Amino acid sequence: MSDYLDVSTSLSGRRWVGPSIETNRAAELLAQDTTLPPALCQVLARRGVDAMNAASFLDPKLADLLPDPRSLKDMEKAATRFLQAVRNRERIAIFADYDVDGGTSAAQLMTWLRQMGVASTLYIPDRIDEGYGPNEAAMEALAQAHDLIVCVDCGILSHGPIAAAKGADVLVLDHHLGGETLPPALAVVNPNRQDETGDLAHLCAAAVVFLMLVEVNRQMRDSGAKGPDLMAMLDLVALGTVADVAPLIGVNRALVRQGLKVMARRERVGIVALSDVSRMETAPNTYHLGFLLGPRVNAGGRIGQADLGARLLATDNPHEAAALAERLDALNTERRDIEASVRAAALDQAEERGLDAPLVWAAGEGWHPGVVGIVASRLKEATNRPAVVIGLDDAEGKGSGRSVSGVDLGASIQKLAAEGLLIKGGGHKMAAGLTVARDMLEPAMARLSELLEKQGAGQGGPADLKLDGMLMPTAARIELIEDIEKAGPFGAGAPAPRFVFPDVEILFAKRIGDSHLKMTFGDGLGVRIDSICFGAFDTALGPALQNHNGARFHLAGRLEINEWGGRRNVQLRLEDAAPA
Image (cartoon, rainbow, N blue to C red):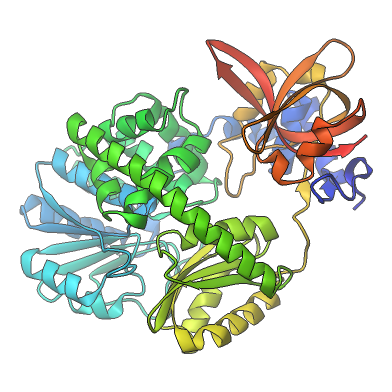
């Protein structure tokens, strides 16, 4: 494959890769058979959408895409037992993970139960004192005071703790990779069970919980009763899906698309309060969910009180919501400071070890367990390799890993645990958690590196920049961006389209803050487009573009609509550039 526009090494050191000949042909055919703009046809062709399916893809309907909940093993049994507990007014506890997926899963159940007049107990373990997932002491105590325990976003590997819940029934609603044997729960609903087909492996826990509630409502309808409005829950499902970096494909696309519409109605007081402290001034999109709301919901579980996020999402009291949102916003600021110091230390250590290995890893004394996952993400992004970051405390370390596309980290971590190199570990393809004995750290990481290398990790340099095609400034109109947005939402598994503006001149360039670049460019024919490049001065991009001396460039990035002061303008979020 030849380099796009002959760019083999851009200003950020990347090779540009354009659409394949097959994709270009498919896009041309799509443009001929529909009235869609050529740029949108490029995006659809990359996703494998043909003319016959274009209309339904651009307007995904949940009714068409939602799977039958009963296609998942144990679903009917789980829903029946849950509904029995509601009808008999049994005591119900919800045991949730401390991240956004856990919080949105718990909030759905708590909201549904409250609307049915049933109170529930929320239990979220402390990340530092208890670690991830159910533990024997907590499950034993919950079982003494409750008839039913529902584990959400956790539980698939918790054989001992679930066995300890004597006297109570346990339901597991999870999506993490299952082991060869299932825990001794009454029902285990998980699209990533070993005996599932894998057709729904892309669902996060919030979506699994939503499907159970769909089945519960169906069973109620069959008996002549009516359940709560589930469509109103989709804001929670969308937040969980995006924040857990679930791929935006299949039903996930429809769940997030519809969930964003529900969120825009500003009916859930917790999300409204969180949006306000996050200074969200436009209709919500996937960026807001992933980078503004998600980190704040997570902040309680990372460095504060573990249940703050779930309580915020579940409350119907505006005063409580405002107080919780303020607390989470403050914790998020504190989390950023802690993260910055750990990130600097981890990067230094990883560089010393070498950034070209199949696995990039770092471990440090007292590194906060609440930020190691975020730091692992930063290392992964900087190196295009799977990364693991571990905080050491006394005789053991707790760590978190993030992977790159095509490399299954969760399966490798589970193999390590089975081989006895880890105290425990699990997760899914793109993210995993682990606990390791201090004296096993080096051999465990060496073995993990070996397993990941077999999957192809570490073979590339900086990631190639994949581009959807070229655009002339005259074609970059608000209407085109709105058309392209219909192919979204964009995120994990569905990257936002990137276009190149070839051979343009820079009309204005100014450094903003510490490292950002604000710029205007044009084609010499009177059309001017504003551009923003975040972190430009952390790379060679900023200096080269600011000191352009009249040189012309190819500019690559994502088109967006910038709303400011009541006006809407086209803006390029610049990601890379190369001399023309």
